Length: 464
Image (cartoon, one colour):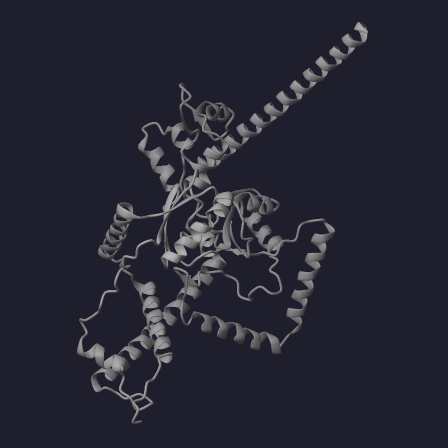
């Protein structure tokens, strides 16, 4: 019995030792991977392709007498934060770098070779790519385009307001030949893609640019007329060649991704064409706005009657008292409509809070700052606020929120805060709009006015 027990204990010890070794091996492998990722990231930051474009890092290097930059600066970058915040681990990783070197203390880093002049063939080595997936990132582009050569730089423009990718990118290769190869092998736009390449923003602050849609439509229809009626042999040959290329890729077992890829120089020509079209459209829009404005002024001056035989009362009223622009009244005090919400953690966001409570009662406004554990919600009526309080048990169960209707001094103070915040907002200097944005805002304002006029009720007197 003792011998068997001894054997079992020995087997368990061996198993534990093997497990420990396996864990250590995995840990070493993870550390090895992190070290490699750190080296790769820093080599990219200090590489020629990035430094010629990264003004901030270049300025930090130029500020230093000996070209060294503190490792603590690299730790402040978001991409490094995702890898590590340990400065010693970064220093350890950079010992094997071919691009940078450490100082004697191991706290600062610099390039091994000084940065030369910006290469003149940069645009020739760069391709423009569009029709990218919504969740595209640098790794995806490097993986796809890395099949054609060494990718040295990737630029993915994002919208400032949302942070979403714009759907296109620029990929810089080491040589012109690699860029040409990417254009040849990765240019596979789908059948339903627009005929004309070049994705450019068709909005300014999420508002469509007027007159451009029609112009684009005219261009595409003209192209269809030119190409649709005269499908000559060369076009059919090109299609056959395109299909053949697809088949070849499938034979090779390659992933065929529906992208449109063209040289940066071709993209720049398209951009010039687009800007010229935009300029012409804006000039036309400006002329139209001026005509509408002058017509409106004439109506005000002469009191032109409308189709129903009635005078335009709104126009005459504005002519009589142009300075009487009444300021919209602020929210009026109503007792029992403010509900205070407290959460154990930062609240999820204004939209989530509003959607949750709007399912029970009409919400007027959610006063919440990002990261706060407390917020105030204003309802249309006291009944609405009480309806939400009645559903407090379900809300607490789902979100762990504590709800309370404000009353007394707390309610008075909060209503004072509403009025102070509103006044501060009204006193803020307005952002000056210029150029295209100003023109589009004017056009949008006129469009809304015309819509309101069209939907206005015409009232007749009892004698008509």
